[in-house]
Length: 98
Image 1 (cartoon, rainbow, N blue to C red):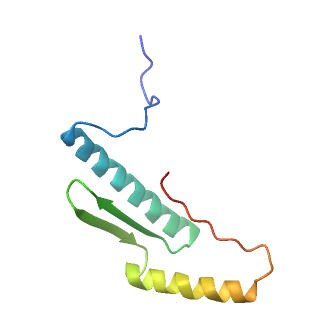
Image 2: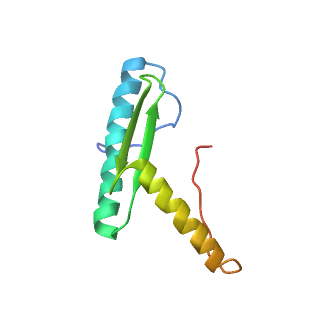
Image 3: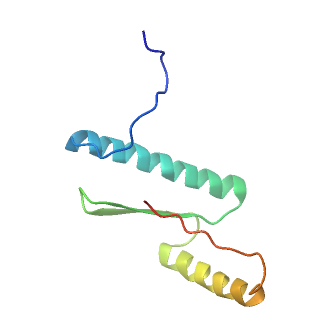
């Protein structure tokens, strides 16, 4: 008899449209909740942008302001940090889907 609770799932595209939409919605809310928690608990500015290919809709969460303002502030800070720390250990990490 299997144990109750969480179990490992295979990360692959869900073929059933309805189940894919339900999973997308639940995980989108989960990612947004984590972003809000990081913003509040870590005193961080956080932005999450998500696009659903099935519905063609964009979803966003920004801890302060709007996405365009967030990106503008990020670019200004990135340029300033690169000028200030051109030969230092400062690094930027981009996380992308594989």
